[in-house]
Every structure is written in structure tokens, then in C-alpha cells.
Image (cartoon, rainbow, N blue to C red; front, side, top):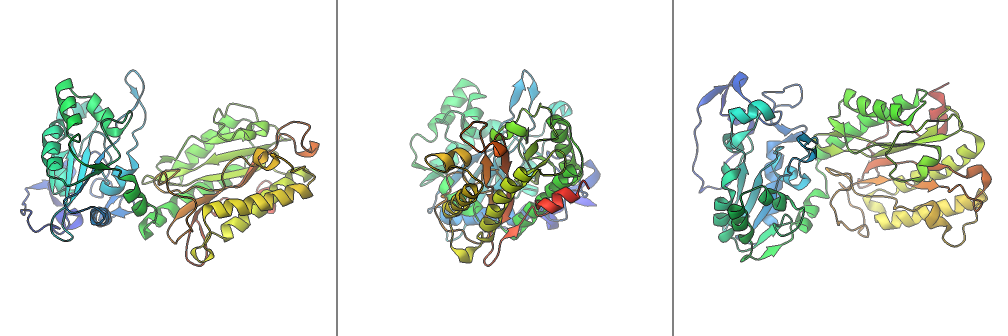
Length: 483
């Protein structure tokens, strides 16, 4: 197959969205000679389908996202985003790279040291996409792996303009200088922001010049605009989240089939099985908490022994194409619930079932209202089990919120209100839990227990879509796995 400086133009290159931009022609390059900084269909057909820029998401969908963002900008306004930087654990030992979710959502570009500028032109509906990336460098790539380079920014990622990231101060000065307003959350004056890290890695003279670029420009936050876009998932996004939910759910069910003696072994099995079933990696550091350890919401040491008399709580999920799932299951280490474990577990499960049933647009519930429903149901159930629910009892036993938004991030669309009614296309978790301290205040049969049950849900108009249904959670189903 002959390609034009990257995957075939018919596969990736989109119709020119700005008539003022000149047309381009490219030389032919053999597909076997191509090297990019991330998988593409032509180099990794086992991972991506034709037309997909990242797993499950086409180049066209990325362009449509940029178009929708540009439509929210004022005339001659621009949105400015920076890629994540590679983070180091110690010395030259680096962590696995993870792209900034906003940058990824708009570009599909999955390398560090890059800047994207999306501008709304004066004409109605016109916009331009600028993508500045690391240039190709064979000597560096021999050590660090392939880079996509500036030509791929045009041919593959559909930028209207590109350039070497090392020249970013010159390019940004020109683009931002002509802008009526700049929307960004990556301010160079904000410690730990993407731009701050980018600027701090550059020579002092260039860094100072970059910091001055925004000084004389009206700057507004980009987050509200992007939350509006990212909050409602496309069909392709939901399909990705269903795929990762299914794979992760099956990994949980496989885990419940087996006997475990240590938290570490169960942790390792879940992470391995996520990948074995099609996930790219884990979405977050798993919680694997046996017995009293489950009372610590984000317990991640995962280094204790598991006892047959205890429950084990596992909170984990895979990631696919940068989309995540979030699952928690609690089950008896022995494979069989004791009567008190079953009673408390069923109280949490009944609450979760009810709240999931309300995750539909026509119910007009907000996440805060669902949380109140969960509080009411748990309180009533715990009273029936002999708990004194006076004072701060409910806050002690159920200390976290029922739900959060999910998508490219485990806690997606930061700052998104939990007070607004749910609408079709939103994806959320539903995760009631009860964590009983080992003190005389609580009934002896339940002391030291921690139970949480969590699924990932896509809100639809008339009914919820459970993205993680393969992870069994009914008492009879859990016990049948080991019978």
C-alpha cells in the first residue's frame, strides 16, 4: 500500500474546512517504512480499524469535536491546550505516559511536548487547527521510540498548520497576538500546569518570552466549554466504555471464581486479566482490601493476608483507548457469606439497584438527589439491622458521595455540577458503601466490615445502560462461582 507521508489520505485526511487554506500534495511512502509515536491502522491493524485515529474514535469525530469547540468561541477567539509531560519516578526512570485528557479529546495525539491551538475565524463556522509537536529525530528516536513528527501532524492528525515545538514561542506569539480572547486552563503562571512544565524545561530567555505571550491578552477558562462537550458521550465513546466495562467485569468474575490468600495476588490477577481481555492498562491503582482494610476508602497498599472469615473489597477497572471503567465488588474470601455479611451486603445491593434504576433522563434526578435516595435507603436498612443511626452515624458509615462522572478520566469533567438533572449520554458511577468501625458503638456482628458495590452506568432517556454488568454481584451468583 502506498501512503502519503502517513496513512492514506482517503483514510485520515479530511475535507478542507477552511477554504482559505492551500491544498497540499505529498510524496508516496511505503506503509512498511512508516514509524509514528502511537499506533495507527496501517501500522497496527490488530488494534485500530480503518479510519480510526485512536481505538474506537475516528479522525472525523476528532474534527467534529474541534468544530463544536470552535463554535463556542467568540469570533477570532482561540483555545490553547498543552499535552502532558513525561513524569519521572526517580532519576531517569519514568512513569508510563498518560496524555492530558482535554488535549487527547480534541486531537487524538498521544505524545508529550505538544501544543494545540483551535481558533474560530472571522467567517461564520470557519476554524483552524494548529498542532505543534516534536520534530522527527532518528538519533533520539533510537533511544526513546518513534515520534510522529510535524508532517504527520498535517497528514494524520489533520492540523491546518504545524511546526516544531522548539519554535513554539514564535508561533504562539503570532497566533495569540491576533486573537480576540484566549481560552485556556494551562496558564504559564499556574504552578504545575501543563504550560508551566513546558516553559520550565526551556532556556530562560525563551521561557520568559512564552510567559509574556498571554500578559496582554484577555484570558478566560477553557474548562466550562470543554465540560459541556465532554459531559455528553458520543455513541463511539459509549461503545469504548462498554468494551472496557465488559472486559473489566469479566476479570472481576474470574477473580471471584478463585481462592485468594493475599491482597497482592488478587491485585496482580486483576491487572493482568484486564489486559488479557483487551484493556490497554489499568485505569487507576486498584484497591484490594481484606477485612478491616476496606474501611479505608482509598487503601492501595494491597500487602496484607486475606482470611477466610473476612470479606475482600476490590475497586479496580481497565482502560481502553484512554476511556476508563470503575468497578467495585465485595465478596467473601471463603466464597460463602456469613449471615451478618449477607445482611449488610444485601442492604448495600438493594440501595445500589434502586439508584441505578433512577439513572435515566426521564426521571429528572441529579447525582445529589440520587445520593439523598441512597442515604435514606441505607439509613432505614441499617436501623432494621440494629444500628443506632442517631447523630453522625450515617456520615460515619457512608462517608463518600454516591456517584461521580466518568469518561476519559475516573473523575471526569472536573467541576461539573452534581446538582443538575442527568441527561442522556452522561456516564456516571453508582457506588453506595457501608464501612463499620470496629468499636462498641456498632452492632458486634458487623464491626470491621467494609462493603461497597459500584458499577459504571450510561444514562439513557428511558433506562440506564449498565456498562459493567459482567461483574456478578448477586449473593447467589457470587457463591455459585465457588460451589
